[in-house]
Length: 279
Image (cartoon, rainbow, N blue to C red; front, side, top):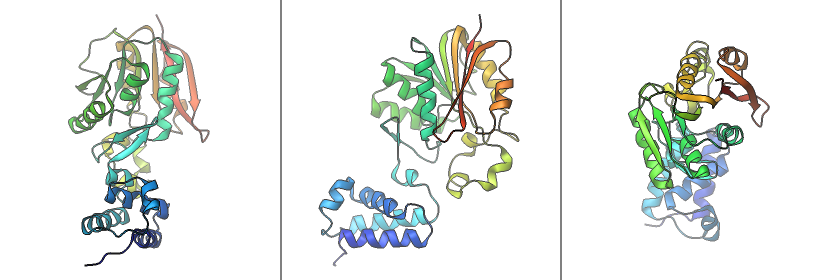
């Protein structure tokens, strides 16, 4: 049985995705074909005249079908880059976004001497693992989802990060007064925006990691209370926020906090709020 050459398979896949109104159809077809082949993009173009094997053809067709049905590319390939490192992702965790890298950047800038750090609601472990690797020190991370913690643990093992994983709601299982830094990317999308989300997000990413209640800010009050309990005097809080929630979230940082700063993302939206616990 004769199969088509790689360049023809790439063209056909690109056309299918374009007809299905999938964004970045050509690039997506390249990624899916490379995933089916177990190769990098450079290899694909250097061997464009080779024929697809039967196994690769079957895998490629399935991946194209999954993407056409709306499944995120990252879940199909099981991979998403964060802070220059490859992270494994599955439907059990939120796909790490570039905007969340600002949480790590602000934490590194505002708490450069922090020795005891925690990531609350860690998901794939992107924030905690990145902090551990950038600082070459251990970190603690929590999540209410055991399935998410399995993904996070896999990432820490693959990337060689020293992280202690704790299953609990926020940081309820941990004693207070021992941390220099609390980081978090909590769920903050308002429930009323559910139907307006892209179907890739709404239908495939975990709702527990997306929606923060009717207004999207319901989780911040208990999160800040836990953070204040966990932090030593002078400790730093660094948290991601929704693009329209700066005012409401800032108002929750009461007299127990000082040095409140809000950093914008590359699109100019308020993205990360940070504050220092007062004595």
